[in-house]
Length: 338
Ligand SMILES: Cc1cc2nc3c(=O)[nH]c(=O)nc-3n(C[C@H](O)[C@H](O)[C@H](O)COP(=O)(O)OP(=O)(O)OC[C@H]3O[C@@H](n4cnc5c(N)ncnc54)[C@H](O)[C@@H]3O)c2cc1C
Image (tube, rainbow, N blue to C red; front, side, top):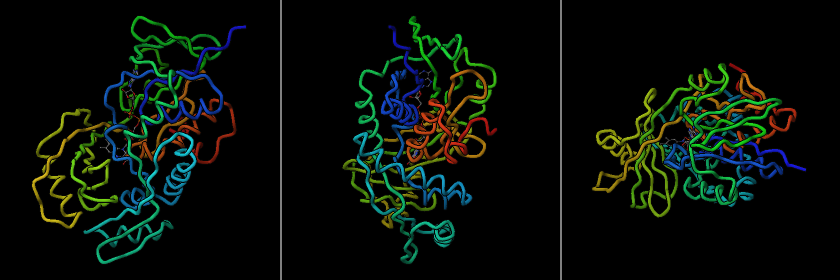
């Protein structure tokens, strides 16, 4: 008896990895294909931040609840995958503290006020490098190095995927290619939906100095611990896909970062980099069935919250693949909502 081909996931950023992990845990054969280049997931700060993200972007109560639900999947997900989850308080400092505090309170998040500081215990953090390594280790030989050049749909949800000269058979396809344009062979409505994803460049810097022991945010910048140093981030530059760091942008971020830290500027060695986030019109990811094509699924466009929402996207896509009744959160991320 021959076993059916694996479910193929294209793209091993946080969304592809979380989807592959969820499917593997449920006993499915999965393979992931990714060229292994730096991506948005690896440059990110790893904040699991439903509270501050909801307050900063003035999200609706429903969207804030969805972010909180996504966060609540993290303790079990981290335990099962070997990811280190850091549950240290996060703070906002400086201008707009009143607005941020009022939004946190209105949305039901935990907060403490201390002068111009707003502190919450509702936001956590992971280190993307450690988290990606843990997920890749858990997936082992499922990872294929390469780029999906084209796909072909067969009968009854069967797919063939070309990586270099090699064709790989799949019993379902998950597109998790970040902000990249659609590859060849996808059906037209799916192609159009992928190409409508807005790229948003984000520049971030890695400093070797330990600038803070918890996430600190404020107008124009945040500073977050990372390994034995810190990251300083991040810009939101809609419409840009370029990833070469820009010196002036770095200088601006650093000035804002010193204000957030409440310290006067000092010489600091920073290694700047940039990643491109993908975003939909409502700011929420596409997680579930593609608009056309059989056994074709999307795990795309989580905007600023790919790490926060990774486990939720992974389990929602796995539920759709298994034909389970989607949860209200999974329904909110259904790509066919547009
Ligand atoms: C500066 C910055 C800071 C951020 N900070 C945070 C944060 O603190 N918290 C948070 O939750 N989120 C944060 N984000 C957002 C988060 O990083 C993104 O939302 C998330 O990484 C997107 O994940 P993804 O899997 O969709 O895409 P990506 O990480 O871009 O992964 C997509 C992968 O698909 C691959 N791919 C593309 N085309 C193909 C193909 N044809 N074949 C094979 N592979 C292909 C790419 O090479 C890539 O590896 C930040 C982002 C940036 C840029």
